[in-house]
Image 1 (tube, rainbow, N blue to C red):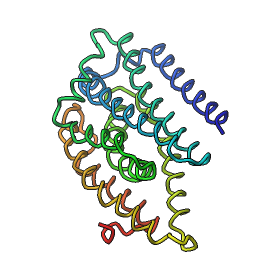
Image 2: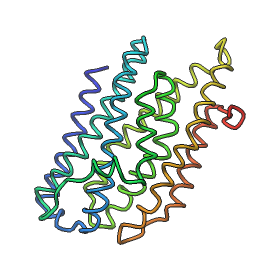
Image 3: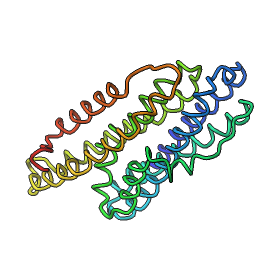
Image 4: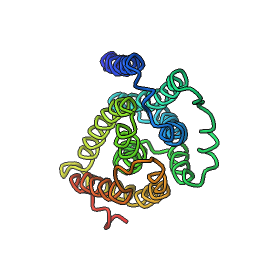
Length: 268
């Protein structure tokens, strides 16, 4: 499995590298809107790399604690994913420094540590890093955090808005991370089904426990997403309203949980 995972990672990284090469050769970087580059890529998107790095640290520890080769593998692969996501953002910004005059990748760490809009997200990540339950980490990250917060912060804002601001390159990069998210969602869904099946002696208890995790974390994840609402007002072109994007993300997340038979309201 590890060899296959490495092949996937290599193919994705090579695709990203070729995309950057092609964009540079075609002069695409010169078409990036300057406000988009400075405020969304240089501040918001670069700041997200710290969230991904924090999740990498959480999953790196979790893969040691699972005490199962099967679970250890998927947790380890997700740790690799998170590290790759963080590194891709950093390398992408370095590429922009080379091709966009005047752009400098600096200041994002201060945004992550001090900007009020990101402090709820930072607290969520730090709590996940400090947690000691690998099952809760996987469920919360893949069934709550990503479907709501990553969807709002990255997919609906950076990927969706990018092409309208002369930036198809970042959208391609994010597309590779979304493929990882779909894979991690799928294995987490199967894990939940496995431990909550009617044939499992403690299936009902496990269902209540997992529902409780979702019920506990979802309001805080939604709060973190709402704290980023005004970032949607920064790009010159308004591709979609924050409230519409959030409503769609919340609806899909609720469907994911409902399809797994988790009664979150009862568990809460």
